[in-house]
Structures are given as C-alpha cells and as structure tokens.
Length: 553
Image (cartoon, rainbow, N blue to C red):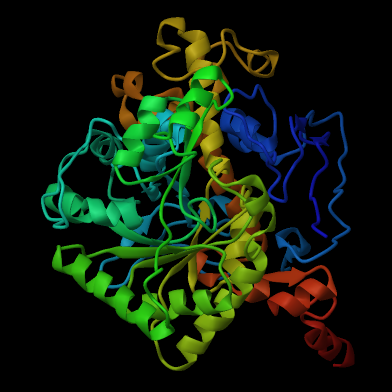
C-alpha cells in the first residue's frame, strides 16, 4: 500500500488537486489547461511563499503526515540535529550569524573527466517527441538554462519532425542534413547558458540509425551531452506518441516507426474516414533484441561508448528505466567501467503521457526499491576501489523534501534528482497566463485560457504581480531582454526558487551547508518495512546506542 502524503486538498497551504494525487503530490493526470491549484502549480506563481502556512497571524498549523504505511519515499523522514554545522563555505564560521539557511550552497557538479557545474541538484526529465514537449519547449529550455540545471531533449525529435531531412542507407555519418526542431531546442537552451547546467540529447534505436549523434557532434561538438537510453520511453516497449492525421501516420511509418493500427491498410483508412479510428500510436523499437547474454550487452554498450568518443563527445550519459536488478547492476557497472558522466535511474510511476496506462500501473520496479538497490550495488563497486558513475534518481519527485531524501538515500553517489512532470507544470501555467493577458499571442504560445481564472487573478493582473521571481529573472537577463522571456520560463524559475529555498531550509536543519555533506544518516525510516527494504534505520533505532551512552555516562 502506498502512503499518500496529501488528500486532494491541503487546507494549510490553500492548495487543491484537480484529480487524484499520486505519491509525488501531483495529480495522476496533469492537464496543460488546468486552472489550479496543486502545490506545484501554485509554487510556479508565488514561489517560496508556499513553503509556509497561509494566512499567517490568524492561524496555527499542524502536520497531517504522521502515519506512514508501506514502502515509499513518504515513509522516509529527514533527520534534524541540535548541534554542529558541516560544510560551511569559504569565509564562513560556525558562528550562528553564518549558520543560516541562505548560506547553504546548492551548487554541485557531476561528470568523470569533464565536470558539469549546476546551480542546484535538479534536472529535467527527457522531453522528446511528445507534442506537449514541443509546444512548451521554450519555457522548459529557457527556464532550465536560467536556473542553471541540465535539460534533456528526449528521443525521436528528429524522426517525427516533418521538416528534417534524413538520407537513406546504413551510413550514419552525414545522414541528417537538416533537423530544424532539434536545432531549435538546442539553440534555445544555449542562448541563455551561463556555464551552469547542460543540454543533454538522448538517443534511442531510431535516433541511432538516423545519425543523431553524428549530426550533434558535427554541429555542436561538446556543447551537448549525448545520452544513450535503456527504456522508459513508453515504459517497457519504447517511446510512443499519438497522432490524429492519417497522412502524418503514414509519414511516420515511412520514416521507419511502428504505427498502430497500420495506417496503410485499406480497412484502417476506411475506419479513420468514418471516425471509428481517430488516432494512431507511433512506437519506437525495443533495444538489445539481438543480444542474448550479459557479456554481449556489455560488449555492445562499450562499443557504443567508444564510437561516441570517436565522434568527439567528451560527456556521455546513460538513462535506464525501472527494469529488474540484473539490468540495474549492468547499468551501474557498465557506466562505471565506461567512465560515463551520469547515470539516470528512473523508477516506475510517472511520465509525459506516452505510456499505455495499465503498463504504467503494473510494470517495473517502483522508485524507492530501485534507488535503494542502486546504492547497494554502487557500494559494492566502491568497496573494490572503483570510481562509481555519478547518478541521478528519477521517478515521482515534485517537492524539496523529495530532493533531499533521494540525495540522502543514494549518498554519496547521487548528485542530483530528475523531475519530469513537476517541472513541466510551470511551462503550462505560464503559457496560459501569457496567452490570457496577450490574446494575440495565445495560439502561437499554446495558451489554453481566454481570461485569467480567479486562482490567478487573486494573485495579480500582470506578470510583474503574478510571478514572485519576475524581477529576479529581469535582473539576470536585463529589462530589454525580458520581453523575449516566455512567462513559462519565469514560472519555471519561480518554482525552482521555491524548491531551492525549501531544500536550503531542510539542509540547514540537518546542519549540512553543502550538498556533499548529505549522508544516509540524515534520513530515517518511519516503518520497519521501509527500513528493511532500504537499509535506512528505523526512526527509533537510529542513534539509539549513542542516546543510551549519554544516559549511562
């Protein structure tokens, strides 16, 4: 049984979920046209104010998250300490005037030979060929670039772009002569890049065949990180999108994709004409089908890494999904052996709307089990003297405490947390607000509202009033450039600011003033089952021996 942290409404914060909340606190179905107001949605507007109970001065507040059932991240709690301070920055002392939460440093880095600096331990999920990723890309890319975190371009972006030009034949070098959508996505991020974060370009089977790596290497060199992918497009069967055009479905099939139902069959075309079939699902292929043993998988993976390095890539990452323990061990071991720069481990549960629903419900390993085992396996390699690949944990994270818990569970190997659905929300709400305030831009920016709903108008009537971080962004880019920043990017920055501030507060309470000081001792399990499965001590066991020594002194 999963411990749902919140019911549909949270009276303390004044937030409510439109749909049923998942373990992350997001609705199981998150809509781009939503008028609010879950915690993430509202955080995209009022930012760090949502860290505190509403109506201060006329209320008292008490937690309702004290009963923990089942094995999940909500059944982990964060440890606090009454003395000490660790990891203070240069020029700071353990004086109480210095030991304040704004002095917590969230800057970190990942990578093997080449380090990628980031301003906070956060990255986006893979935003690929889904139309929702294309529609709101400017918000995600510009917002992520301004915050200084990695943004991931997911699979199939070149393949589904009708304007891209892909040659025939098996040779991948020079096969792509034009990829306008991929270039748009990369260029949008790089325009505001200040040396923190990175743009990551992900590849699946079709991308590899089409020569995406070769194209990116030739055009952008090491401005990008290239990422190999093991699973989690549409969970267990490869990436999926749905299209409502028969012509486009045929185009995608001719591009080499699996399209269901087959748009070239006369009976399917007739059913589409009559309205019985209204859309087609485009799927990618399974990887590794020509490999039968672990040794063959390793050989194939190492050959792929060697080839990518021969193209000139100095930073290479791997994304793996919620497969079983054998595949997890392979991902950690092979990525370590290949000196990869990052391994993202994504547990079951979330996604960008591509996966068959019952597959999402019932397939794969839930995040906390996968992440606990990732720590165990990484520790085996570390004990042998190996430099374990830096890791990012993904799968059902939305709040600042989630970031802390994931970093602690995987410490010291986990360097950052990957959020998918949560940090797409500011892109939606920002575009809706911008479209409502500027009707002439509504269609171009994919706004869904004609007018501001009361959930927004109660906050303000213009961008400067609505977004708490508006002037922080303006200071960063300048007043003139501000006119080119989409509201979705401002909302993204506002949400990231709230997450950063909340994380700083949690870290200060744990007396950890830099990320490298977070350890597994900074969390405890709220039930015995979670303690058993994660290796994190139970709430009443951790430091119990030390406590008894104090009493018996």
